[in-house]
Length: 207
Image 1: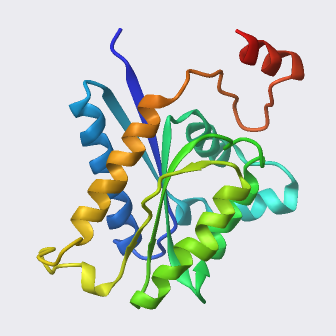
Image 2: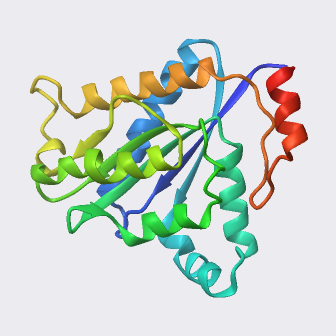
């Protein structure tokens, strides 16, 4: 059976279409291309968080995820890699973006390869990737690619004629995600709300 890798794309853009979705799609496409160049089949699942906003809010009220949100979380946890993109508001990620990752059990993303992306109205907001998004995923102990990608107004429609344009950056980040995915040790995945017992984790580390 051919090896199939799965990439889950999480984007918190509010408009349709949104620059966050466009950036997320480009990052996923570049990662997919690098994996396919390595002879790996790839499946990509894209989730617009605005479609799950009510379910995310209900999770905080009820204490558990509704079925549709559970399906999104399960897909993210089962993915071999994740692309996560947020618009920048008030120099940080959006509340919807943060709320989604608050819903996920805080040990569920340990070691998960992730590309971080962000969009905003000013190049100054690019710093939010390093002082807001990256620390969040370091806290969750995900494995974040060295290259994170910010896209501002100047990055769209300029043909990327400049050195290190948007296409160059997304290609580099996609290559890094593909590399991390290919280096992963196969591990038992858990669904949302499930955790491995100490005995199961010990068996994995000694096998």
